[in-house]
Amino acid sequence: MKLLNKLTKNINIEFNNHILNQFEQYYELLISWNKKINLTSITNKKEVQLIHFFDSLTICNEYCFNPLNGLKIADVGSGAGFPGIPLKLAFPSINLTLIESVTKKTNFLEHLINQLNLNNITILNERIEDVATNTKYRETFDCVVSRGVAKLPTLAELTLPLLKLGGYSLCYKKGDINEEIKKANYPIKLLGGILEKPYLINSDIFTDSRKIIKINKKSHSPEKYPRKSGIPQKRPLI
Image (tube, rainbow, N blue to C red; front, side):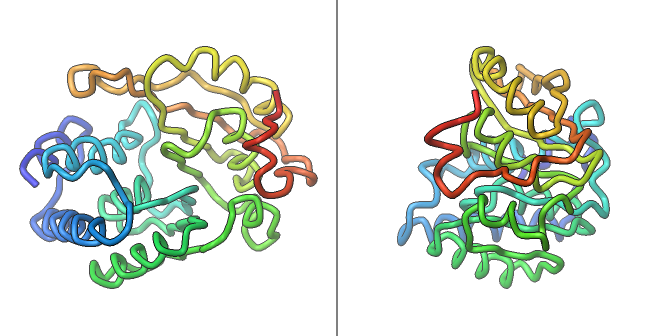
């Protein structure tokens, strides 16, 4: 994990040998399970360190969203655990909830968590629409993260109902998303959010214009949102 260790120093994160060994074990388990189920198309070790591990940690920059210690965080559409698990390894005091509807992937997440001996993690093998309408989880999180899940108008409907007032939805994006941002203005406002200035990740490290879209929860989300499973994706609020 030499590349990861080098990159994280750019965002003032210092890893001890124990955490680096956890990332090493994470990589090995990811590659092993990827032979059985489709978790990622990126398997080269250096690329995993950069595109999965380090990319997951880019919200930790002081100009984006820091510190994360002790926060209650939900990872929507966790897949193979990005960005939630790297964030948990970097900040062990996080109370993390992983939301993933595909059972094969939650099986991997359960195995991963057991092997890495992580605690204060909840795995929900459910649709995000169902989680966000459950009073046990609705408006209880300090931060919701999402990476490669959906376009911003849909993400606004799916993530903002989970946030407590003052919380943040942090959406990992890349490429030209100006049109996506324009279309998201209405649903963000409708769901009680305010769009802040996007955080551009260091272009010397990534060449595909990666950004973190920050949405601050300022007022309660209307109870009728999110709509039933699949509808926010098929008919976004634009």
